[in-house]
Length: 136
Length: 188
Image (cartoon, rainbow over all chains, first blue to last red; front, top):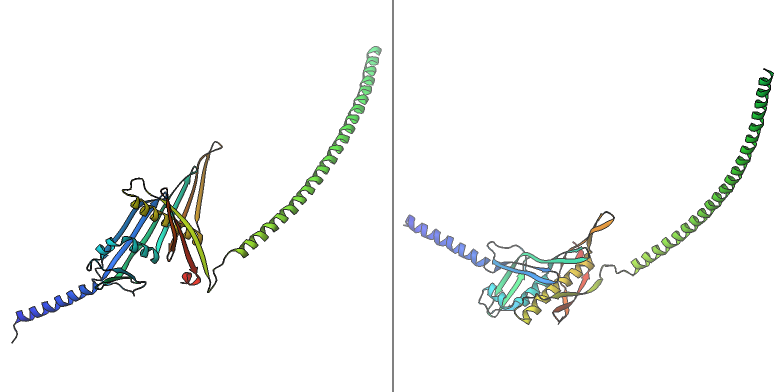
């Protein structure tokens, strides 16, 4: 005959397994945003934000990008090792261009803001490679 | 009494004579003025005719010019590339960027200048494909321009642009970029 405490342990184990599995399922999804500002033809500010998705993302993986997996499952580390390639890939995916130019008394100045809105990326870490793909 | 009457008659006669003289003088002046007026009127009529002729000539010239402009616009439109179904348009631009003053190495300067040049190239593509919004404002005080402002805006989403060539010379980075635009890119 089962005791009440035994049942509690069983349900706790079950819950922890469900929680662990759900976290494991979301672990390969990242939210990435990118922005840089160019002021008078000079790069002024550049930001790349990477964070793990706290909830499961919707959508199907689109154009894939493959990087050599040298970071053992850490996307931030992997991107910091290959920043140029990843930023080139982001440019390919598409950026919003916001350009504002002013000419006051014949003196010209301009600001261009390039933005990638926060996008969910699915990242599959294999033994040798990491496959990154945006979910749309 | 007799002398008084005589003097009165003489005065009245002299008055009458003087009035006649005055009236004859006035008529001559009026006739002369009338003649001058007629001459001026004729001149004015001639000038009016000339003006009318010039206006007609101007109208004809204007119509010809408008026709020329219309035909030129029509030919320009005919020459302009139109994005049709199953066709692509190739757009090529060059973006320029400079490195900031406080860079730690030439490599960093190159990387930053290249990023700025890429942004400029994207802006150029957006301008070509989507167009530019322009606002202008001039402030004039006491018949003098105080402030002249021109603002331009570009907003677009650009993807699948390719970098063809990158050059970096004397702190200036130039990026040649191209993009192929197809009809399906714009279909919602």
